Image 1 (spheres, one colour):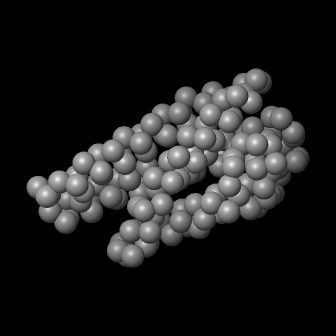
Image 2 (cartoon, rainbow, N blue to C red):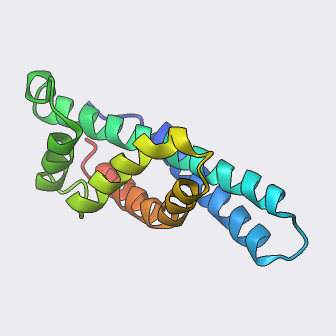
Length: 140
């Protein structure tokens, strides 16, 4: 059974759009720090949403291609390990780091944490695109 990947594809595209807008705002000197912070918050929100969809689609793919009992009760670390073994992702450690960053997103009022998440969003976007391509190839 093939997964409907349209929501994942839309989320990856939305994150790309948010990053592109942020790049234009940050490179411009027309905007205040508050305005730029609002744009960065949008990138962080897109990161959160896209990350959540990515791991849920990893689990769904494993449920379909292995079994629901295979993934029942697994940790995110185990999930990423299985995704790596099944060639859905390329870098286990980065996905663990994205998980940690996702856990920190409730602290986006902290400027240092916000900056860390924002800085990582570009690499995450690249990895999310690679994951989307991998799952599209294996989606039958």
